[in-house]
Image 1 (cartoon, one colour):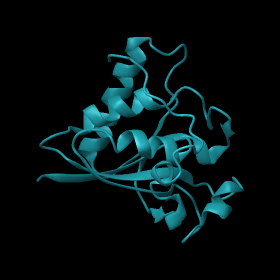
Image 2: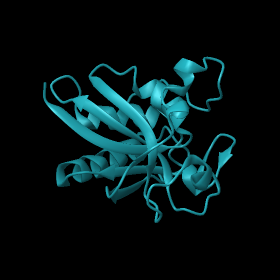
Image 3: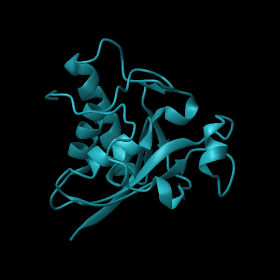
Length: 165
């Protein structure tokens, strides 16, 4: 197995984690927080919108089964990357669309994928997803991990769009 780790954010992490976890080649997902200015942050603190964190998913995937580019193309089908700080009814900086890259290759791939998504014209506006160097990740409380598996009727504003990029 050829494992790689990445961190992405695209609104409420419950629905996004559920969809990403279904992609062939995904080995592990953990929901949590990245991109903020407070250490060991909690869900309640992030929910205030004052910590600078985004609800983020740590993803471990097998590069022999799934390329980083293919993962990102799926990510851009699961959320609306053109709405800054919002997914559905969820509004605030904690719901922004972000790719926290862990290598120069991930950064270059993310830039190329965003160009491809913009060129597709599937969205009425340009992609607002930020591409930021990964710094830290704080896992969310256990009750948030695999939330929609534990709570099948739980809230999600995410769904897979039938786009071909």
